[in-house]
Amino acid sequence: MSPSRTKGFTLIELMVAMAIGALLVLAAMILYVPVSRSLVDQGIVGQQTLSEAVNYDFDVMNTANAGYGIANPQLNTDAVLVTGTGPGSNTTVLIPSKGSAQGNGIFWDWSIPAGGAPTGCAGLQVIKGANSNAGNERLVYYEEVPGGMCTATALNTASNWDVETVLPSVAQSSLAPITVTDAQDCDLRGSQIVGNPVLHPLVTLQLPIPKTLTGGFFAHQADQVPVDVCLHNLP
Image (cartoon, rainbow, N blue to C red; front, side):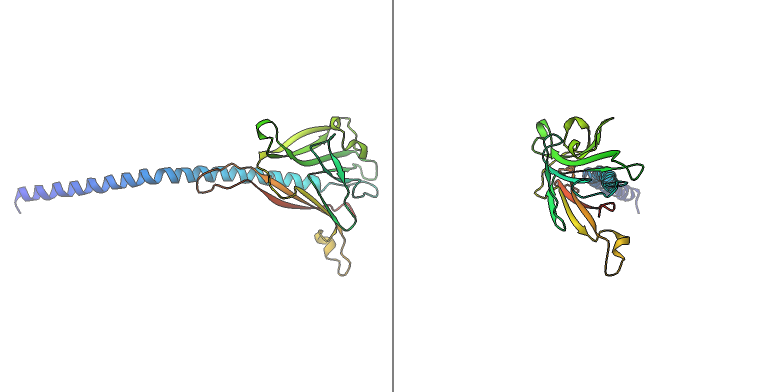
């Protein structure tokens, strides 16, 4: 083969290689945007999932304290369902015996050491946001101020509470935020008593999820997720 023909083949091979390389670069550039967005979305989803997990654990651990250490704890006294916009503006919702009721907040108390009057109280409520988020909802946790009162009459006194936002404003949902159902077989150990299980009130919270992703593969709408809490200390 002559040197000129060898040189021609080498030039053609070089051009083909450059064309293939250009296609690979172009393909990489085309894939970069969706892949990088996917990685960012996954990171946000991971952060949101962790936030929600902490939030759920927080709610479950604290709400389940209702009636702890109280002598003869009672539903509607040591766990009170309310509807409204917060302490001072709430209305108590009566939970019927062996029935259910719905509201947007629940307040509870406990006693440490056991056997005495209430020594602590807290509340959890889904209320409207403020300012530009007035059409949305947020989940707030109430704890008594130092020297506050945990009696039934103080549960709705605004000055008795410090407010801590658990989840910021998210879009509204048509689902009822909180449902309390009396006389439920919700305790694992109590349910194992054959023929006569131990019954307790069951709280179902429809907890809001923040709408963090509005586009991309992981885009989703704001929603609510149910979380059940068995009030083991209440009959």
